[in-house]
Image 1 (cartoon, helix red, strand yellow):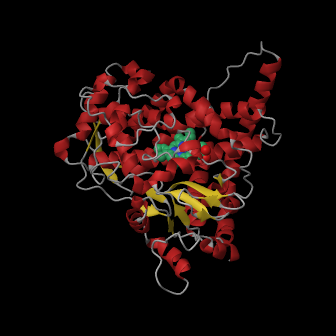
Image 2 (tube, rainbow, N blue to C red):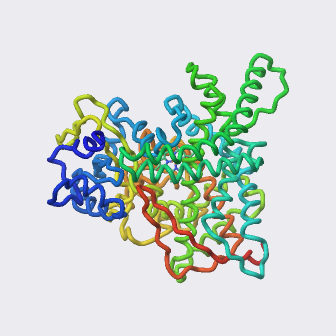
Image 3 (cartoon, rainbow, N blue to C red):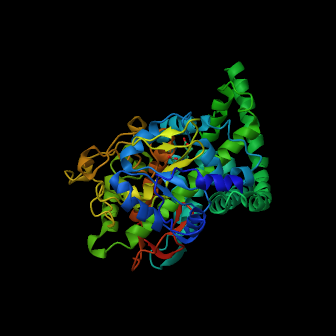
Length: 520
Ligand code: HEM
């Protein structure tokens, strides 16, 4: 109770609160109202303060209010060292790790971010054929191959099954990605932890987190233990093989090319005796999969909902189909990384859906670590222990950066000078990390879906921005291009609205009618 009380009283009076009224226990009540506020407070605070370059305190349903950083200061904010602003603590708390998975020690997992950033991104070209054939297999079976009759499919579940399978191939490789018991326990673990993260991590006050968290911890533990029963022996086997190969180069072993392998190698090469314990490696991988898979599923659903509910006269769906037909004229083009760089319109459509529906409403959660507090650019001081974040969902609707920001314009990011997509190639080079293509007027420098900037925050920004985004670009572009070029999908009359739960932007459950395109 005391910690909750301190959390809401920590901010200096000079920083304005949004949604706080003249009433008894005003801060506490402002936080309680957030449970049903959706995006309203964030919107009101952004329009009143962020637009003027000012910070404000956003009340929080979990009684962890945060100072919202205005766009002018996002770059400064993201460049501050961990000794001043730390990301690790808020992440653990937001996901509810101490209560939901008390056995998970994340202190030794930070090297995994580097593995994703470097190894996964470096190997994208090599992974593409496998990713494509897995996606194709799932889509063909779930959406069907009947060219005459329409099939009703639940969009979320279909994307979930498709992306879960294809991501697992990349994360754990064969034979685990074909092991149904492992996949089922992994999916249960991910779903339970996902639900727990929202309710325990985000919506409950600190005092109630242990009560409900430990109740959910048991089923999570069982699902996790089942997944670990397969994952840990696989890790042990790979570690043994790596040791043997290192001592005997003649040892005949075909080294797998997947995330698990790169993480095992990185863990063994570290000088941290805790990091290379198979259980630790398995925990790290599970956590990574949890964050990586659901975000991609939600994004793919949003992309399709946006396209299907767009005005028919703009024919966006057909435009993407034309592009895919040209780029993937031959079947081997699906395996070629150069083809993806030509999918300018598809790339832009996914980026636009992520602009309008980023998976979280705020990003870059940090806690002030510096003993004597954080000095803000305007001279304000934020005390140690206070939380800060960036109002990403509202920056994306700021008319200064996105003209007609309320409008869905899937080709908004295609450089205006480019008439023919073949003239322009999207760069997905990870060296472009942090490239600043912040405003519409700078569109000529557009670097593709995975480019993060102070005004495009779907993947965060700076040191802790999403290291999986180059992989996401590959996976989602293949998926969207394959669907639009092989399926007719019946239009939706209007865009079913996303729901805001905690900081999450959750697409609604929608059933759509699909039919295989003639001649495919
Ligand atoms: C459409 C899909 C995805 C979206 C929208 C997304 C978005 C994000 C966002 C907003 C952050 C937080 C950045 C911050 O705190 O400032 C993040 C972090 C992260 N993401 Fe993703 N992500 C996606 C897919 C993935 C995938 C597929 C992986 C793994 C392969 C992944 C791995 C990570 C990791 C490890 C972090 C933590 C980075 C750190 O703290 O240094 N993400 N992501």
